[in-house]
Amino acid sequence: MRRSAWPDALAGRRLLVVQTSFLGDVVLTTPLVSALRERLRPGYLAVLVRPEAAQLLAGHPDIDEVLVDDKYGRDGGVWGLAKTARRLRRARFDVAVSPHRSLRTALVLAMAGVPRRVGFGSARGAWLYHVRVVRDPERHDIERNLGLLAPFGGPPVGTPRLFLPVSPAAEARAAELLPAGAGPLVGIAPGSVWPTKRWAAAGFAAVAAALAADGLRVVIVGSVADRPVCEEVARASGGRAAMLAGQTDLATLVAVIDRCAVLVCNDSAPMHIAGAQNVPEVAVFCATTPALGYGPWHAASTVLQADLACRPCGRHGGHRCPRGTEDCMRLVPADGVLAAVRDLLIRRTHARSAAS
Image 1: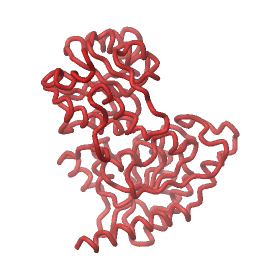
Image 2: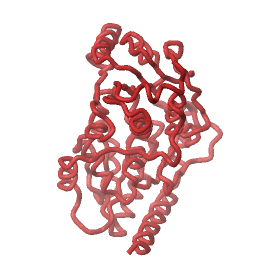
Image 3: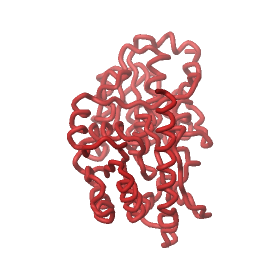
Image 4: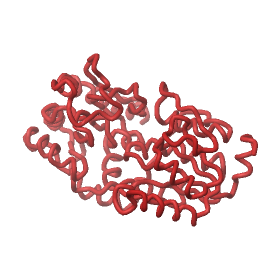
């Protein structure tokens, strides 16, 4: 079939998008999902993610069903791969689009017998895709993902927009957890899966304490796994920030970030969630750099980072500094981060005054 004929031929058909990588990668896939919905007009659109990401997409207006591949749990290993492929085969998808570049993903889709499969030429199982798209290393990951629209007429015109839904139930839970007061809310997200992507806890604590002294409401957010570092930040800040880490499920975390005026964070999933909720970020990049394609998407956001020749030391960072110095995590000054937050808050106030 000619590529130009795909959009019309797929109208009303069954479409699958696969992104079983990290939470942030799922967020960065949402513009692709929305563009595919608009361009192809499928009768049914499903997204396959890991279990922990399912809450992010629940209720998304462009998604009919969120499917789960527990590849590190009950769907792990060769038998789990085969089981996932059987489930997808029974769903009888007409086309699959995969921004995820793992060999497992390519194998699952091939074993599921999806008749039209689109993926990146740099994917480990690229030969298993019918159409292989060039992934531009110079572009933001959102734009790279949108490159997968090449066989369907190309990326949409205009600036892509991230989007995550906020359910009424999550909104209500967030409202119960947030500190009382009328001052703007600032979120502090000091966690990351990768230790070398975490800015110093003392830096986050100094920013939290100073913002609280300015009269702002400050909340520390994160997962259960982030709780130890978040508690360290809370203690070092003198208890001036409300500790929410480990107290929210993912849907509630999105609702909390949605209420923030600014989020202070690392290169992590909360940074991308903030971008999806149109919340500007002050992001500290340690082992990684925005040039890798995963920087903040919000136009007003600010990135702070140490100017070191050893950065980036890996695509995801790592569990320890290869040089043993942790300079990238120590050399970003707290006063620089604080100044960036205050600047964003001033700009927010001016924008609201101009609009009133």
